[in-house]
Image (tube, rainbow, N blue to C red):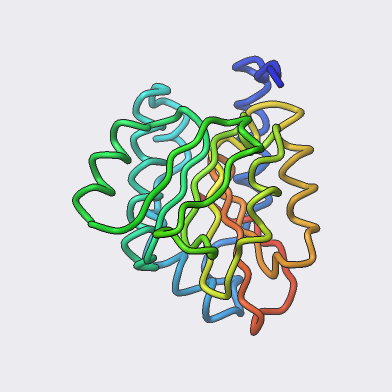
Length: 198
């Protein structure tokens, strides 16, 4: 599926609306989400975002995802899509944990034996999200699983796919940081979708 990204001006308007309506840590009552948000997500003034280039924004988002990986300490890693493949391959190889990299539309893919049947940390780009790859791997979730999806607001199709996957029964909490989304499957969490400032 080749979706059309929003025009720059429309994307910036969406960014402003998200920032103005999003919650900060002072509105969070979930200890799990509060700890994740305050320890992983940096506080960046919105003006810094608006006046930074696309490359700078991508670096900040990538840093947050790396920090999330370190925070949750998963035992394996799965990535679907073409975004930042080289960086993640180099990073994961230094961790010495099972990992699998697949394209954004290979729905015939199966997990290898040494990987196991539970995906603990998965990273999808917007194309993989739109193609249903994140939904495909939900059946391999566990209580500690974290699914990270980049580009959830970059196109109308990505936004629709993000809203759809949030409704999955297995998903107990989602966090929308505008540039990236997080899905959690902890049974002890009450079903809730968080829109947070970033």
